[in-house]
Length: 228
Image (cartoon, rainbow, N blue to C red; front, side, top):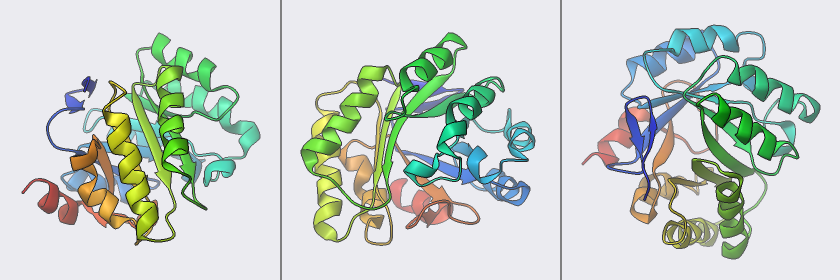
């Protein structure tokens, strides 16, 4: 698998890296006190203070800047998505999240690469888990757009759905030479956060303070498991 570096943190080699999402100054404090590898600044959850959060994290951890649209479970109005991603890019984060199903996705990936920013091409479904084939297609969509890292996060409704996500991750890892992130959300999906690295996951998300997604474990819990 090809390595992708965010500052000095390598995705795609070694253990799965731990990402913590932040949306407040207190979240930042807890994240920086934790042993996380990357900090995700959720601009849609902190619409009036995300610039300050970026400044607080800069130079202390690699930054993944993210704005999640309402159509993919976030708080940003869809009409403001492209504008907000562009504003985030102006702050020079190490990486930016781009939703692969957004009409401006290709343009945003190009803009990011022009300024030397890595791209996490993502797809989220907070309602269901599609088939293995459909999940593989979403990974492929991100890869074809030129994303450096391909991410899919889905909501399972039972153990079978979790296995579906892991199988799609395993199959895609054998086909696409890019770091992958595959997540089954919620308490049911916690297995994917633990077993995912064995199926090709380059990173997983954990909570240092308030969880930004259902089913997240704490950084200390996750690190103890994946580093043993």
